[in-house]
Length: 527
Image 1 (tube, helix red, strand yellow):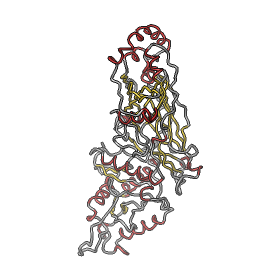
Image 2 (cartoon, rainbow, N blue to C red; image 1 turned 180 degrees about the vertical axis):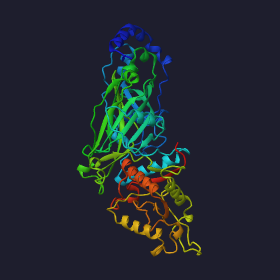
Image 3 (cartoon, one colour; image 1 turned 90 degrees about the horizontal axis):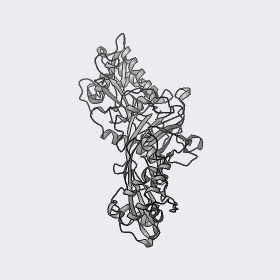
Image 4 (cartoon, one colour; image 1 turned 135 degrees about the vertical axis):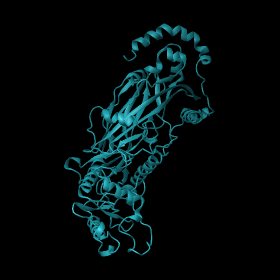
């Protein structure tokens, strides 16, 4: 479809100018009711405008300190036109752009200011909200390598993401590298007079769509945005519709990062199209957002971690209208790091920490991880049936075993061979498997110890802070087939690589919430 041509608009104005002038006096009888909520003219246009926003009965602007992702958060933008220009339009004349006002709030002022620990806590809180909002079968799929970032969205991930809950307040995550959202935006247009309260004039609504991919090679994400084709709806006075005004006004879209420019910035252009063209355009516009916190010296910890909020920004201009309050999408978090223990090509990355980090094992008959899966399920849900016991045989157990890691129970945290807990976890596991040392009489009895072709499996994994040596948690050991144990180990290695699970860093502020965490889920179906 061809975009609306300005030449056609001029022709329409010349043709109907006389009619508009003759009918201007009766326009209020035909047009939607103009809202005039109480406001003091003495307060000036800016204050009166704010009062109008807060009392108009429509969507309210987002307070700067409101929690991001709150269910009641509207997605709005407010645009104004001077009364003189609006009168010119009603008389079939061209507006002169006499409003001459600056936006009352920048986009950055609509995003809550957060410290590193506050952002980390917000990410963990969002995980909890996503967990509580899940359906019975809503478990993330098995991990996969991050998709290559290209000039257009990955078609397979695009479909998978938007087939999910993309229209929710929090959007939808396919994994820690893929996010999307689809939400309705309301744009309210006001008539602004120097000595009068602003008057509501019209409303345009549309659905924006965004699709974002994290980068596993650079501290960078790419965000794709567009207006959902055919979603625009115009609630304007008849004379504006006649002149095609709502379709001619231009909307600009930007990719933004809520941080000082030396730490994080949008690197791409700002496409600006008439609303009518946006509505008929299926093109995805790409915005690159790069994090420079590592080089700026503001990143945290061993892995130079930073949390930043990002969003699509919207403004409108043209035909005498100016943006009063810019609009934006929700502002999810991205987590960037420079972990040097990944592969040489993957020492920098940005992921979306709002994605639930779930490692799936399958316990279905014939699955390569069937025995390990059943072991983990028993350890998570019937821990007192597992070894080592908490007391020798024939002695009552002094307490119930507590084993973490079940889907949104206490989580697990990654460690590597460089951490001292790795060796102590292994030593405790071996003692329990062989029923010796501190576990004598409580570990695996001889008949349950590994035979030829078997290995001793432990849960939580040796590669976790919560492993066998933990003073806060219990653990379980069991003999499983060597091939089963190898498959499970390979799955774990690929999982922490694909999901970019960082190694535990005790030096981070509030380490329990600032460090990456994950859970283990046992599935009995391959669906």
